Image 1 (cartoon, protein in one colour):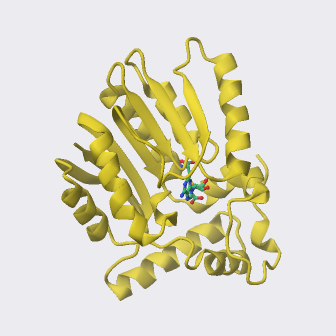
Image 2: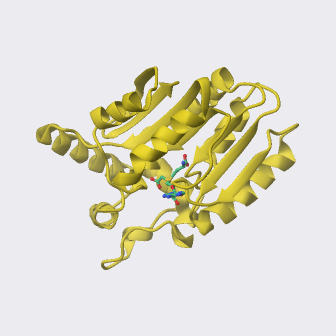
Image 3: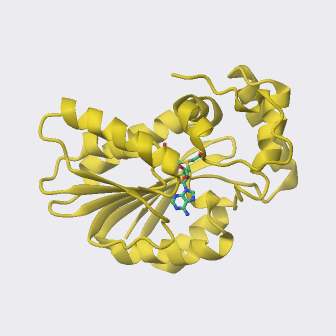
Length: 244
Ligand code: GEK
């Protein structure tokens, strides 16, 4: 695994982008930067085994290198399913296609996967029993979020599942400061320098826009999801499961 040293160098005013340099170190970046990331993938596999229904589609929106797609593929027990993995970063999609092709070659009777270069704000969604957005909604402009989550709800069959993982902000400024501080300490333990942590933070400003857990839950409720629960929280990173 290539080590993420992107912010060891000064990026100047350049905002964070999902380019080739990021794609090349991405597995290491997520493992060291997102507390709970491995747990999110494990749960995606378990939930796929329970919720994916025969003859339906699964979507991985903002798939990057396809880690959640592979977790769904390993979990799915139902026949005649298809996974559609979408990302708008060419560097991610090129590598994702290679990773899925390698998995195709080693998995007996693999669930078919379509890897699509495209914007999830415009992607058609239909006949889905499971839709995953693992740390991706946070990168969309706020105005587009309601519409996409409403379309996700509409695309799900009854009893279908939406898994939403996000970085969040706490409504209590004292707690927000504490959680950010603990998170930065966690990154320091994972071998990011203080300078790397602060440069990445600055580069993500206005690129990753977090909301509160209450805002996420209200959006899911407004879109008509029957049941929602936060099943994972680790500092300011959460994962929510919502059932139609
Ligand atoms: C994982 N889910 O490993 N349309 C399509 N893709 C987008 C858009 C958009 N409008 N905006 C951002 N992305 C993955 C990790 S990473 C999370 C997801 C992170 C894509 C972007 O190109 C990137 O690949 C992904 O969303 C977010 O489980 O880097 O913190």
